[in-house]
Image (cartoon, rainbow, N blue to C red; front, side, top):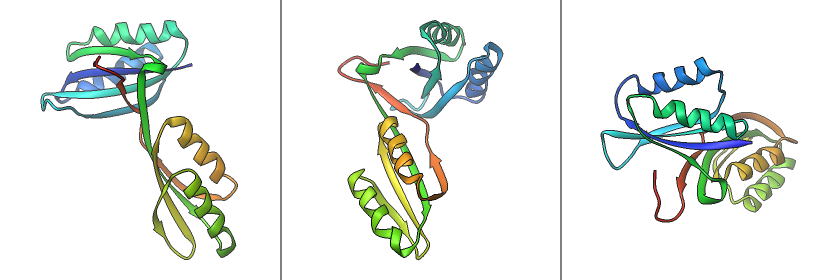
Length: 161
């Protein structure tokens, strides 16, 4: 099972290194990691997705809370959070495939961001499951490159991390 953990940290050098070091020492695998600024220039938001059971997720939360530069940690419940990823997919295509891939882009609500005689690049920002579906649908064609961000997430409603 995948668990999404939101962490607010001091925005200073070495914080991300200490977080990744904690994961390495404990043998926890990071499935996805995204870091970005918040409305406060002194604070960054780290969104971490880990694979494992509830015990592993709780251990991650407890260990993160012990780090000095961590201000707040929260495990986001699957039903109570909005998750998004961004992906760019470059596909090799022939004239015969062009229409099929454009149809997939329309159905999946993707944007065509680049097109040439031999390639087409799609952009999609959506739930991680929908990103997976897009990649699966395009896998019957020759995918040349994929660039995918980590998951970002926010708690729904008035609660926040």
